[in-house]
Image 1: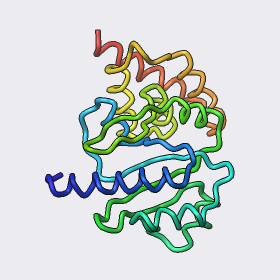
Image 2: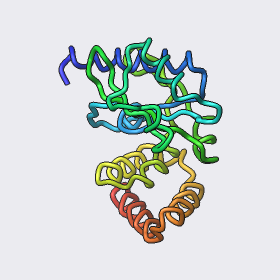
Image 3: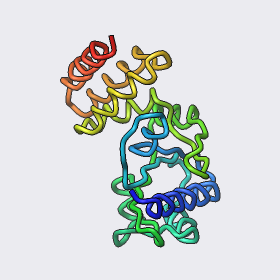
Length: 197
């Protein structure tokens, strides 16, 4: 991205953070921007975040974020969020796409509690720790997600509890009815360890 685009992207992040602080629900960055902030060199053009959903009013979320320059990018965004558990948003000035997913699971609550504030340009935002990003990425499991997992494992090997990660991946694989996911994850971990040795 060009310096101007970076500045606009940073403004979108700043507006998201200020809006979420006003809403008051625990939140954190996940997705590409979070991976970058944990040391993985790559690009991203959108902002993914999650927030604790208990007691959250979707209309109020949209109202507050709207006052911070962030608007829905679909019609009936509140009802969509109720049904799909995600707000599809856009930063008005920069056009930056944003997704704010609603967190309900014990794992997500724990991840939110362990998020740490990270400076991203001039903005300080709560970011999921590397270990929890690996779990999020293992659930999504696209090509980019697998690449992110490998890089996070190399960079943060000493701080990632692989036993915990495997247990969580196994639980999600069962819910998703994709039992092969754990074997695929183990294969990726072994391949990553081989590259790192």
